[in-house]
Amino acid sequence: MRDKSFWILLVLLLAGIVLGGFLGSLAEGNAWLSWLNFGQSFGLDEPLVLNLGVLVITFGLSIKITMASIFGVAAALVIYRYI
Image 1 (spheres, rainbow, N blue to C red):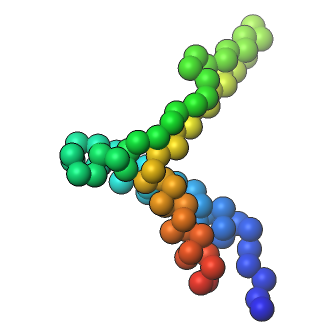
Image 2: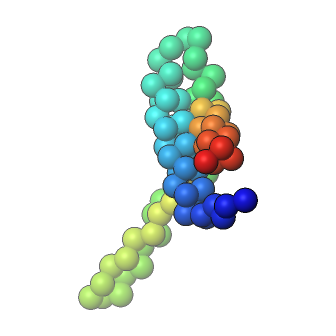
């Protein structure tokens, strides 16, 4: 059995999340497919700002998990299994 790379899995999972989220946002306007955009959003509502006088650093993170992104992750895992 050949050794599968962690990086390939990571790229496939990220691609599945992004494509699933994109398809979910496209389906938002369609009455029959609007359930694909159903999900939960979590993260920082306001970005965290660290002002050091000379340098200002802003931290922020927001994640939205939708049904379409879950299907994208599942598809990525199936593709990874058959690579």
